[in-house]
Image (tube, rainbow, N blue to C red; front, side):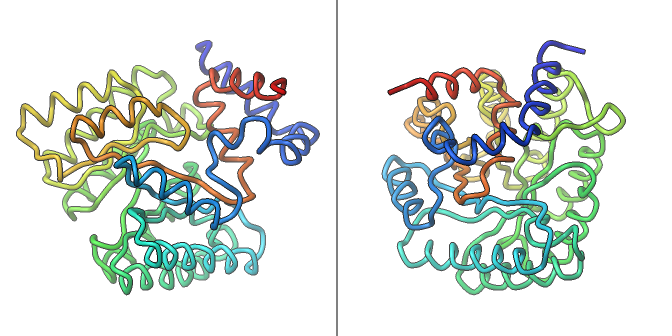
Length: 309
């Protein structure tokens, strides 16, 4: 096992400790979490989005939460997603929304989750907006794609998109079908802990598959959201689109709120479309721990924040 994999495993183990979690949930926004999470309230988040838009950055808003245990919480999440879309319209924000199906009841009842998604996607169509379904761990990949296909056929690719993770073996086959449908896909490496049975374990293999998926989707003429902070991969994408004469309105770079800010702004100055994945809400702990695990250097930032006066 590589050092990187060992660090990820250790971070996930520590993050699962109840005492560690309780301490971070009390003090987290004061000791580094606010670097990666825009705000706990939608009102405060609007100000962050306006600031990003003012720098030429587009946004995708993610109301944090996942794996809810009851229908009431799932309905509340759906309500907040709808309110977020209305808020985008109200303030004229350059933004769309992303959702996680386990937050909307997938693990309670897939049909109930689908009904929540019908409500959300119908509102997106009514408002002329776009909603993207995030991809979670591999246990729900199949169900996530099944629900996406139902919504795609009803509402169209202009209003609903999906995410594909390059560390999963199955992603090449999944993307082939999505490419034939001309779907707007965000391609990521993947941030969940997955076994060697379903996912590549080495960075080299994940990166190689990432570029293969990006290039294939672009070659199919599909709008592609290239979600990475890896400057080596970004340079490869730039060369590829230049060689194939792919216009810049056919793709965008996506990055996380609080990560690689200088790179985000440099790409904007170079004339590329850049969208910032901007999470908000009080249920930030699972998201935050994945950000630390995927790049352990972020842990040093948090430790310094804990001792900063």
